[in-house]
Image (cartoon, rainbow, N blue to C red):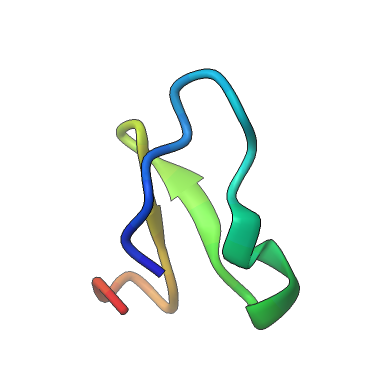
Length: 31
């Protein structure tokens, strides 16, 4: 993960990542 999600949703959402504080995280960790 680790990409931004200010305008677009997380590209890595398929990998289980979600948007938090304009950055995509996985399991509350930056991946």
